[in-house]
Image 1 (cartoon, rainbow, N blue to C red):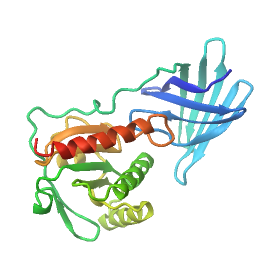
Image 2 (image 1 turned 90 degrees about the vertical axis):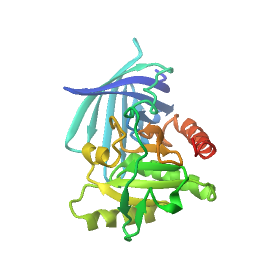
Image 3 (image 1 turned 60 degrees about the vertical axis):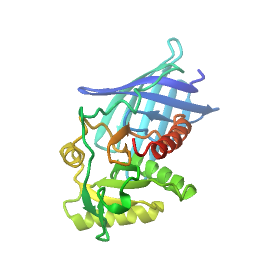
Image 4 (image 1 turned 180 degrees about the horizontal axis):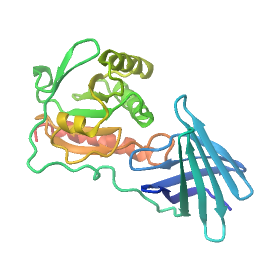
Amino acid sequence: MDIGGLWETTFSSGDDAFDAVASFSPKGNYLTGTFMTETGDFRFLAGTVQDNKLYLSSFDGSHAFLFEGKINPADSTIQGSFLSGKHYKTTWFAKKNDQAKLKDPNDLVTLKEGHKAINFSLPTPSGQMISLADKALAGKPKILQIMGTWCPNCRDEGAFLARFLTKNPNLPIEVIGLAFEKYDDVQKNNAAITRYKKALNIPYDIVYAGKPKREAIFNLIPALNNFVAYPTLIFLNGQNKIVKVHSGFNGPATPEYALFKQEFAEDVKNLIENAKK
């Protein structure tokens, strides 16, 4: 069976179930692809198709993934298993559907009615205070990136933002990374942020914002009703009011990436043009 294209997918292990869209690109027996979810994708996977079995895997230095599946041509389905390292295993079921889609990432997070402008003051790893109330930032539209140096999809999004800002150095817009880190020691968190910025050549400031817990995010940005995914982009107008929230990141391994890049460029343009609204 030619398994190329999109597959409507469900991962299920007891109460831990979530929807996904698989994208497969076979070339003979060689297979590449990924699984897109509402929080992000599983990045670049590669493997093989042998008879009615498929195998896809990746190792990025931190995460080891292995997907196996049995292909059923009679009803265009795949029944499979997924292992993440030694500690996590679940099953997945996919049905061929080239129109398969996930929920709109711009609609997953809602805002509190009548929410006010947000503000915070946090130090960079070098000790410089970043505050949305600074005169230097007054009237400027801003993009906040909720992220963590431990998060693979955040890394892909950070690399995208770095390239975008490098190609467009004179945009009247400010990008700030809000890193929610796992260490108890603030110095270790700041060291991780510094290494991360250097590795990805990130030109925007990243500040340590707290532990990766929902209450830490809500304390910092109380206008949010909910939170879905690392990473999340929050678009602010010149008065620091939220105008858009984009949850998750389906990156360069996915067919959604080209559309995201186009949408992001349009969002930045609209943000600049409507900074005072």
